[in-house]
Amino acid sequence: MSRRNLIVIMSDEHDPRIMGCAGHPLVRTPNLDALAARGVRFSNAYTPSPICVPARAAFATGRRVHQTRHWDNAMPYTGEQRGWGHVLQQHGIRVESIGKLHYRAEEDPAGFDREHIPMHVVGGHGMVWASIRDPYLVKWTSTRMIGERVGGGESSYTSYDRSVTARTVDWLRDAATRNDEPFVLYVGLVAPHFPLIAPEEFFSLYPLDRIPPAKLHPADGYQRHPWVQAAAEFDRTEEKFTSPEERLKAFAAYFGLCSFLDHNVGRIIGTLRDLGLDDSTTVIYTSDHGDNLGARGLWGKSTLYQESVGIPMIVAGPELQPAVRTTPVDLLDLFPTILSAVGIDPAPEMEDRPGRSLFDLAAAPDEPDRVVFSEYHAAGSNTGGYMLRKGRWKYHHYVRFQPELFDLETDPEEAVNLAGDPAHAPVLRAMETELRRICDPEAVDRQAKLDQAALIEHFGGPDIAATLGAAGATPAPTALHPA
Image (cartoon, rainbow, N blue to C red):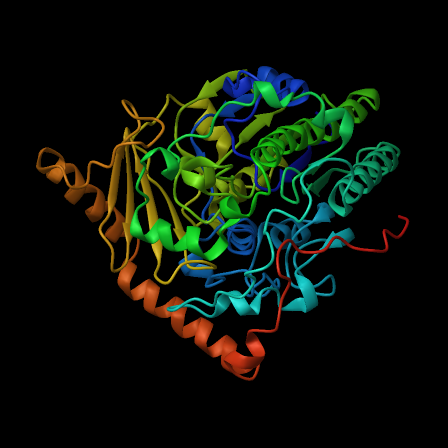
């Protein structure tokens, strides 16, 4: 093979179960399904943190959130900590980005030779108001996080994704003319992130009378865990629907955005094929985190349940045999994977990075007991929350609150918390022991709050900090300048 190329496509807020290839009975994702059919789909993939900025800093650096100390959406990646892009640049590999990064600023040395139409945090500081925690700041009581309008149509985000996709197509056409120059291209698409407005042709795929009910709704008697209840009281999206019909439209819009995302992925992969680059290019599709989408009466991310903390992970390329792997993986595994994809040995970079190459994991027998870990220290939480997955067990550790334990083999919907069951006490202890091998959760919680307090002080104290940052979704770039 004369050249080895890689495209990483990262969406935003995509629950991995909402794809046809994952068995969803309603949602249409033919292009992602086709990618999975010719590649490897990891069915147990997770985010290092179920919120944008910490997850993306972890993705860039290959380190856990408590290692990077990018705790929340006011602590964006600056390029100060070495990322996979810096390694590629050191080795002379062309590496560029198109679309959403959610780092600090285009001027930062974040590991890209060029950033095309990037989306970064507002003002270079992001949501500083959300760094005020314990107690958290209930600020946007009149603003609905998912957007003031719900349903079919266009938004600044759908317009932005169209521009990102068009720029990617043009970029690939140019790359095809550059003889055997290898490249790594990162593409950041926003859908299916709210606002929940989907282009009409995709929204109309999902009639409201076919929308399945959300699970574990409090109106049906479900009781939220107290840590999760705080998140629900922080956002209150469920209370702000104007009618049952509007609530159904929210589901249809999310499904429609997943199909819109799939359409854009299809355009990119189709261009690779048309240019004859598909036999020399590995494609990775993933997302930064998932979305609760009405489960437990919650919307958005920011919990440790499967809907929020799970992500899609599909890798397809000329050297991969089609398969579905159940080995748990996460975004940290992309650090060695990206380097391996273009022929760079990742070993010298992995001393304090826990990731493993997805190529190695795809070629090996499934490892169900591989431990993956996620953590949350951001908006709507007063204390740190931690998730550990090992085998059939999923453990949630909440500072100052009782834990949760789920058996995903018998209870994949996480409906029954086994943490209080004496019969499961040995499993609970074992999972906590595994967690504490990774970090001291109470010490990490204290460090996060110390760093957040220092940030608030840096901006002039709580009164000023409370005014800094977008109320909801980060605005898309207004000037989509030409390539």
